[in-house]
Length: 278
Image (cartoon, rainbow, N blue to C red):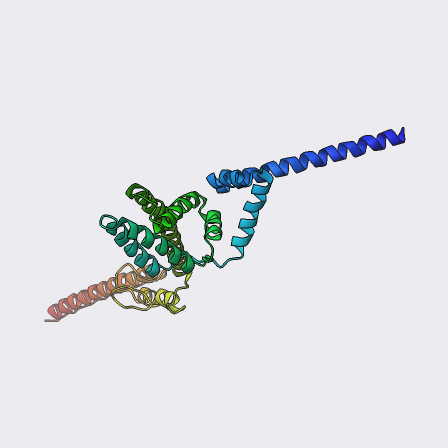
């Protein structure tokens, strides 16, 4: 019984591992197909075996990851853009020369960007990692350029070749444009994050300075409140003191009136006495 159970467990583990491996390979195949697009199908067609084709595509990824691929500088991109415009214009009068010039132009652009350019097949495989959509166009254009050197092409094939080269030229110029925009964005972020260079104490110093037009100091208001010329700004005891003074004044006036009356009566009495004596 134990032996049967062990065999069953081993079979289940093996089946689970096989299922996981199948799911991993299927997911990896989907990732490669999504990344390389038509280049995935082209590689399978050339190798005749999906597993071999996927192994080759993974090898391309590893190889390119070790290369020092650098987008063209903004200045170089502008120069190549102007040169490409001249190549297209020259096609009208010299189509064969235009194809040869286009082939050399993309060769120089790739070399400056960091792609090894010694062998064409390796060039197209390398460019397929970052730009799989242009790999087939590059092959077609280069095939016509080689045939043109042997005098085995017509004007229509030459026109298609120039059009095919355009895809690669535009892809390399787009890499340069994206890199320039990324650098500009990074510089803008650095400027936004830069600290304020104004003196640290300016704000506090400005708060200490009262902006009022009269230029008075903060303590002036309290000083002005202590010496207030208005009639109603008196101390709490002033009302009682005024009442005492008023009462005293009334008493003095009453006493003065009494004394005046006494003096008048005395004067009248003296006058009467004098008349009687007379």
